[in-house]
Image (cartoon, rainbow, N blue to C red):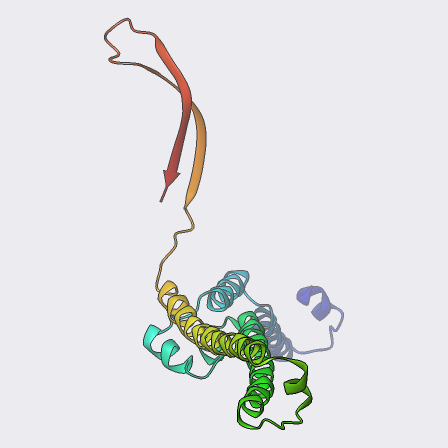
Length: 211
């Protein structure tokens, strides 16, 4: 194409034709080089995608000690382990046990004051004291006291449980589970004693685990 283009201009001298060829060759080389740099290599692009995917899937193992210390503040241990979905359950448990603890404490105080008024002041005008006998007031007061104490005990147990949960999750992050883990169920036929004897064959199912 370059030669034909030069033939169209016979008036050009030989030196001028050579200069045009050199300049045209330089321009073509630059254009080819820029085009090669502009097109990304599929090999490097694929490697980059694989690396990004691996970085997203894998996380560094968590420290069980750090998770336990952070769980001293409810929910922080679960956040440290990236188990954010557990945080609402942690606070919901505290909310339920706290509600029952405060409700039973209120009733315990109410019937406790009525019982005290009943046994201390013969002219007590407390409506609850007038409604129940001394023994009934004592039984009701003790009932709400047990429920109040049980609610606070369960709240403390729930607090310890969320600390243990954070610690166990951090320890499980150190386990390396292979992608080749599989289970295979296949039929099996084998003799009852030895293959050399003419004993009947036993039919069964073989369960194979691959680690």
